[in-house]
Amino acid sequence: MVSNTLRLTRDSGGSVSFSRSTDIASPTPGAIVYTFNLSKITGSGTAAPTVIMRVGSGFSTANADEADGSTFSRLGINITTTAGTYQLRNLNGAGTNSANITGNPVITWVMNKTGATYSYLAPNGSVATVGNNAADVWVGTALTFDEMTATTSSAGLT
Image (tube, rainbow, N blue to C red; front, side, top):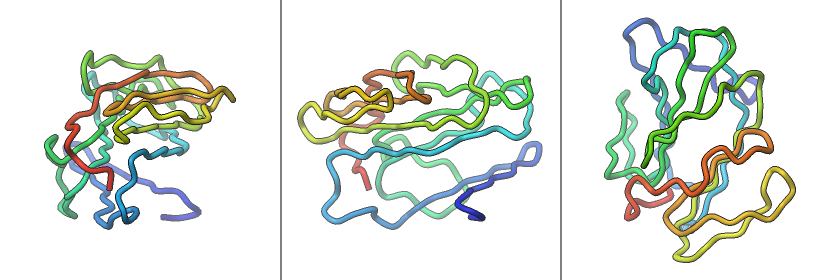
């Protein structure tokens, strides 16, 4: 981390990972809202997600992708062939891609495991809801993925 920036570099064919293996809170929260800025500096295009972000429990510190069974929600990032452009990918359900994203927008990822519908203040200023065992993803003020199903609903949000 430098100036509140996590910078990852992957050489051709290499692997990169980042894990937080310490619980966020005790007791485990029923809902989590992550907000972060994401910008692509360089990279080559691929149809498959080159980055998989996961939220769950029991993650290790090994430089390897975590198992779906330990993952409550996951979100992919596709690196495109256009400089400075990427897409988000819904890895659960339909496997759909977002529109191309440029710049450094705020990404908001809302995950709900409360047992009921969860209401939150959306990036567009409205009150939005997300169902139990689901997630919403916003790019800037646009709802990009609505009600993504949980990867593994029994996995924790730690």
